[in-house]
Amino acid sequence: MPHLLSAHDLPLAPMLERIRQYREGTTPRQGRGTIALLFYEPSTRTRGAFEQACVMLGYHPLVLTPSISSIVKGESLADTVRTLCAQGVRAIVIRHPHAGAAHTASRFSTVPILNAGDGAHEHPTQALLDIYTLWSHRGYPNPHTRWLEGVKVAIVGDVKHSRVARSNAILLTQAGAEVWLCAPPTLLPDAPLPGVQQTHSIEQALQNAHVVMALRLQTERMESGFLPSLNAYRRDYQITEARLQVAHPDCVVMHPGPIQRGVEIEDAVADGSRSLILTQVQVGLTVRAVCLEYALEN
Image (cartoon, rainbow, N blue to C red; front, side, top):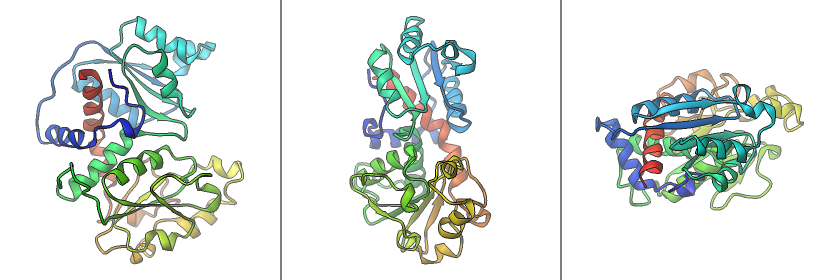
């Protein structure tokens, strides 16, 4: 029974190949039963994609949020997981504000746990759809090789609190990419992430970058003293056409969403010819379906 708690748990090459098969028309095998979607945090893209993926695979999605369950009465995560397992769900997809919550849930679960984002820790299915987007954009090179060798990827934004950045760093470096994390000094991780470069210089990060991924800037960080103002961030770190002049001529731009237009990225870039942002959204359903299929069939 495999849990998908970290990007390290993803068998990358076969999953990329399976996603491509579904995208090209392969009909998924149909299952039966209920899958619990346990979302302690708001979500549009991830929750919606998982709900659709359940239906695509023949499962009934049972969506639980704190306001409509015993969580609001103080029920612990362990007891919630135990209850869902006793009720016969086939798997549990969990999003939680605390890092490590998915790992905690797996200790009490008799069914697969899929991490849909836990605090500032990881978001493995988002990283999988991001790297699939790059794989398809680059013409489906052999996924069993280090097919991103020689490719520089700059991830720019609130890296310190980003689960997306951490999971992407794992998969991108596994595929051979040179990964740079860029943020104001107060928004870089306290400890360097393995295998990646860190800088607070946007020019250094974007220099000859083949891929630039902007991260959502959470405005609550200003209230916590991490940033002086949104204007200061726009001035120093916003991804603009002018800044991308130093990137590789074939540079593409990505964003995990939701986008704050005019903050971390300007409209001309988000909607321009370099952008792969809509492609990322489009593959989200298929990626979540493949992750559910893998967890339920192994």
